[in-house]
Length: 196
Length: 196
DNA sequence: ACCTGAACACCGTTCAAGT
DNA sequence: ACCTGAACACCGTTCAAGT
Image 1 (cartoon, protein in one colour):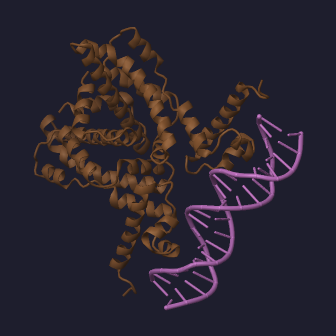
Image 2 (tube, protein in one colour):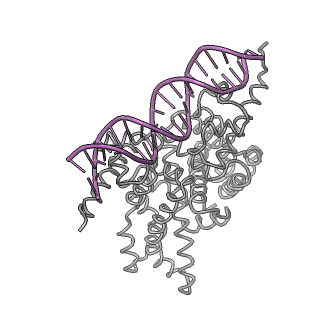
Image 3 (cartoon, helix red, strand yellow):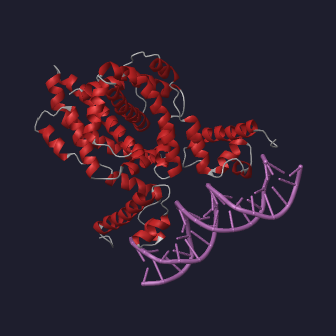
């Protein structure tokens, strides 16, 4: 048996990660030093480095653990075969995003970090794959209703899922730079703008 | 008369800024040190600090000078009263973006920096205002053709311009994280996705 | 006035020593 | 095994001295 349980280690990692998230939301990724996280967590430098190999790995852990948008309900609808049009899926995704998880400002900072940190980008791609899976499940019944063959439905689902992610990214980046915006209003405006 | 001309100072600032952009495209915002810019420009630390008060001001200068997307043609069409539908304006904006200016990866990094640096955010808002102005000019004839009064046309133009910026941001963020995508295909997919 | 480069303060990371 | 905190290397910024 290990001296400390796996649960203890996990709890310790989360304790550090949550202290870090508090610092990040307050000061931003760039301005948060290990010393800040040490002060916020009440632990020592060495304690943090005995649970994360470096600051980058801590960032990766946070992205993997807190950047996921839970879309269980949508996924459930999709699995049950309920037909939800893409606009409804986007609405649900933005709604979940605005009520839970990290702030748009912090998400955009992590995107920026990922441009430079290959490992963080890989973690983000993995997270995005989970999101893409949930979206695909939600979109598939709708795609089936609109296409003749299953192959066509799958291809339409794939393209639609990437586009939904891009539209959500646009919403997040726009909110981060220019201030909050009502999700429904954004979707309506985008739909009407693109129909001409 | 000043010892050195205004032109000399401007040229020196651009010399430093362009050396910095080369470093930034190569190593990213975070990883580029003043020492890198010193090596790339062939100047000394002090020389750089005699033209920019600090690294943040240099970043601001770069954003103000190289992040602007030139939309002169669109603006000209708008001023001439040519009716271009919003989709055409978006297409033109993404086309200009993909052929000139900074890479999507670098743009996203600057967004991230702006979340933490108030001055950089202000500079970015000013840059965005210029872009918004060009977009508004391009969109106004179309909005006039679709509304009864001038007041309505102006309001529709305002909303449409913000949405066009959000859609462009989505394209940029998506391309930065998931790789390049054909602008026309993105617009078609977004339009079709949002029509349901 | 512009420029040089050594010096300083600060931050991420390491590591010998403690429990 | 986990933790402590002093020590080290590196980076942004300053400043006395040069042209």
